[in-house]
Image (cartoon, rainbow, N blue to C red; front, top):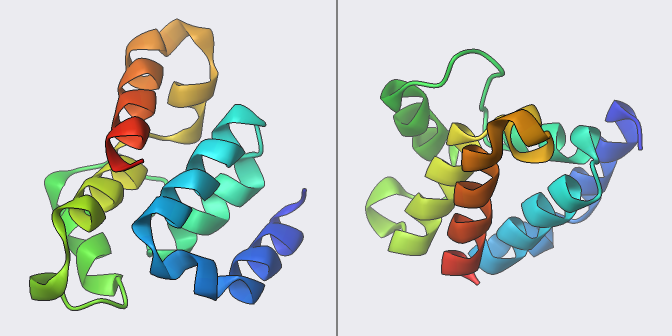
Length: 111
């Protein structure tokens, strides 16, 4: 899946992004299928850059989220933190097994 198709897929299926469980499933699917374009499109939807992640990036992503920050559930906050914290290669490649394990744990927490 290339970048353009991934962005179009996210745009066409915005209704799926209403539930945090669906967002998490998309992120988990993209990682398990090594689909970096879909993972990056999901991050881009939340305004998350590919630069070094800081707590400010998490706050920025929460502000960009269509939901009001005060109305965000704990699961929404876990998802935003998860999708902000883990870059694609850290959860796909073997050298950084710790991040992969934590990503899967956070995904199951949401599920």
